[in-house]
Length: 93
Image 1 (cartoon, rainbow, N blue to C red):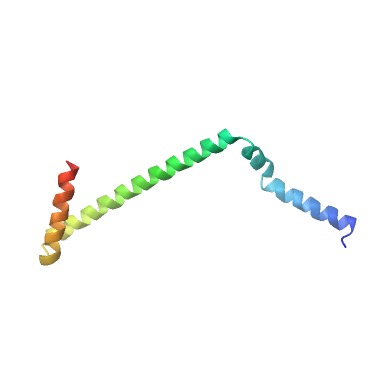
Image 2 (image 1 turned 135 degrees about the vertical axis):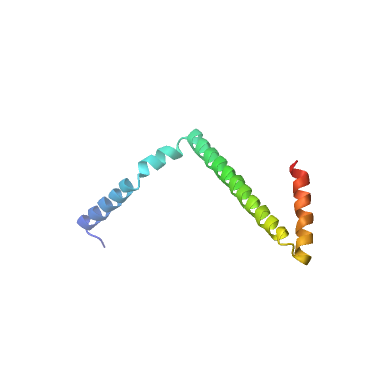
């Protein structure tokens, strides 16, 4: 069994850890549903914008590479890539 002094020491350590983690701020945050909804909305919007931006960059890079491959006029691959690029360019305009 733990002595009273040991218990108080462990309890004080626990309280200090909670204070270092800003636990009181977290509890206040959980009590405010509007703040939670707003924070989640902003994080979701940022995640969606980042995904769209990243996909656009990767798509443009892929089209650039495909254009470079077509310029080398590879016999088998070049024909298929040229068809894909025509399709993409048609729908871009």
